[in-house]
Length: 595
Image (tube, rainbow, N blue to C red):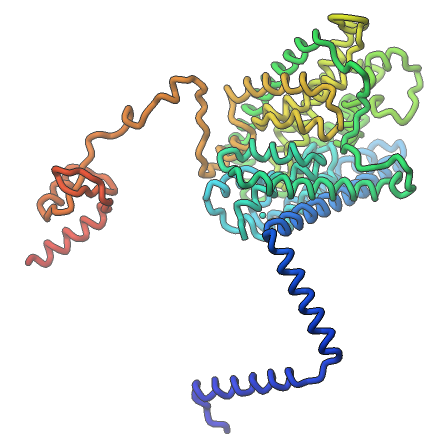
């Protein structure tokens, strides 16, 4: 039996063994010692040179490239799985029950898995995350929200949510020097989704405006540019044209439009763009009010509150099954172009042609391949399908925002605004078939231009952002309608900001997160209000030299939690504060032990 070794001797013995191992390792033979020293010297020189410009550049570059790669991978997985679902739905044949089951069970199962998986990892993974991000940037600590587990849960859950397609109608907008990296990550999210680095940074400035420092501008631009460039580069390499090596293929806009004319709009059309902005602002106010009311009602209803507290996947299954049943193509879905993906929805709404003229000139048998034909139903006009789409998607999108799964809400409202603009443009083209002209020959009405302005105006009014006007131009590569788009966005924002909080601020309000709300009043008199007008003047204070009797008088005179301490009664200069509990404890001690 070995005798126990004292702690000090054991430590000395371990140190001797470690030194012996180090000596053996240093004297062991290694080939090419000179070459290895030179390589180490070169690597050290490269490291010194690289980090002379600051390590922020490399972290931001890695952030942009990493997020672009993840976003692109998610898009590839979503596209492949959606293609498989479309093939299955097509190959089933004309058996109505099987077609219904394949249409509804597929998104229901994916949404249930997204909810169950993400919630099992962390309860913070639901929603878009921007309300929580604003709260964190304000200085509030949300435990485990920025953990790697939450990131993995959001990536997996968001991929499943995106694969549900237009059935659920939810999208994506994808955290050391934590503040700067969080701000840059917000810009990278928009930049990689739309391939728009400039508007991505401007959008994050507007959304995070109370917390966005000027020093973060370059960080956001650099990270967003790296992310957008990497995303577009991967998209080009993955495209069939890129594989074929066609000479004309370069990095292009994500939602490429074909609005190439000399005069995109006439000056007289500015009036209709202002009307479009007014419509988007009013609809956005209604949407924000109803969405916030729905979130509160879901929490107060005993059945939905119980499901969200104990059985979130069950609630997701019920909601998604309802949405999928409504979008079933042989049913109501045929009037909402439900067979299109969200990207196809946007591309079709940005179509350069006038649908009213195409539908009037189309033959009885439609030629396949045109996305606009999904909006043309024999028993309804183009105007009817667009109006029905807007009516149904209004409440369906509100209901979808209550799902406890990772999702992005910017793309759905972007598409919804494009549909508002498309309907407005088609109506204007119907009223003025020869076009409008203030000088020179008549110029045709382009409903696609109204769709661009509508997408920017509605998305901007819901999020209280003006940079959506530039976002539309970057995403489509079209600058011809920039002026009317800006006008529509400004009008819509003026209406929504006056009457409703933004979509992200509403999420903070409903979730009861700590947040400093902005000043709602825009009246100039509100900026002349001073603290003196509403400050409390009758304050009980203590002087530094006050004794036991003065403390008792102060405790009897006021029940405040803290008392200000001043220099003296004649010189009331604040020198500190003292809590009521400290005064009571000291008073009890003095009474128990009188001197």
